Image (spheres, rainbow, N blue to C red):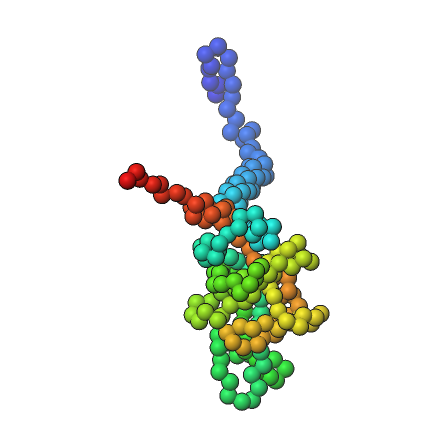
Length: 208
């Protein structure tokens, strides 16, 4: 059986001659899904906020007041784990959970990487008290510029050594691992700039 075409030629449509390349079709579909996934990742990456280390240079450049600092959202760059031994006596638990470490009762407070915090006050120049918990105002940690980390506002403590250091939190003394010394403050620089711009908008004056 033949079929005629407009120019007078004919051909035989043998159904068994055409074999689709399923392997090629599968590869094309996989490549399409991969490209779509890449585009989605690029889109969400572009939409996600960019966090910048809060440094002394940044602070000096914008010269935020304390009222402006209270409107800036801060974040932690790394996990911060606070621990204190409770002993056998009855001790008031302030804000953490109880864990048994080497047979000892230990209160542990974990501030995860990326936890948002707010500025409370500045006890002196280049010192920021940042709170990561709602509740009492004495639940804060102190941050200041660390020359060894490019003057990033890093966690401040006492008696730092290779094992760690101590900090005061909620009126109690806690131990911090040595890794806590690298925890510093992050900000969304775009929003931080916006805070400074909004605070400087003039309201105008009318002729009396």
